[in-house]
Image (cartoon, rainbow, N blue to C red):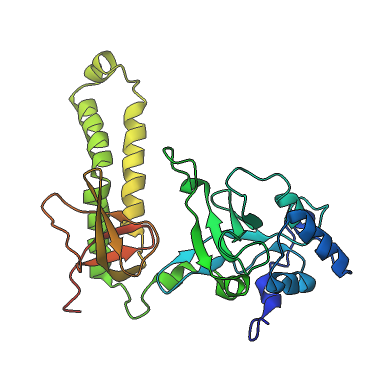
Length: 306
């Protein structure tokens, strides 16, 4: 079980505020495990029990689940240990269930969304091998009270094997190193097509100040101090964009979804949310190449000659 997996490297071993709440101590008897299973009403996977006997709960160092080549699931906080007294033990975490958790056993938490990682016994029964799913607060639809789970892996051992340390730089295509022309292009796109409304508002306010302080004070009812503040904001924002170096990678549009008349673009290899900078004249088609940045911007770019 867990062959070729360094289980010691799985956990974060430093100090953290909830350390005592997560780590449930050593498992000295199988009787405790059996009693917890009886109380929960589900047989726990042998791989989970095996792992808890080695390290009974805690915060993860490897907190990113690699679902497949394209998708990852981030910010898994920790795994609940086998115990009764600790706040983050599997017993305490499942003692008071919500309406949708009838066939679910919570085994971990998700840091970024207050969600949880579950063993799902809905298809396998109480004695079967459950799949591992995630449910975030963001998965709740106002029109549908039942959350939509995301399947991470088909079993617990596969889930542990899938865990990786999250490294944003791994999203960048190592074959592509942005040059000065790319940096200039990205800055132009970000400045003109994304932040132009900010600059427009600030420049109009500054222009009004030049025309006359009287108009500014008596008509717009703005204090005189607003003008230098806007000028400082303009300089700071411009300087930040000009000096910034962008880490970039290429991707292509795999699918275009239309919801409520709005086009949403799905990239082939990039799962993270991107802010697509698209002008009104641009027509986006499936297969178009996009240049993506770690800041979350993406815009159409032809790299066929590179």
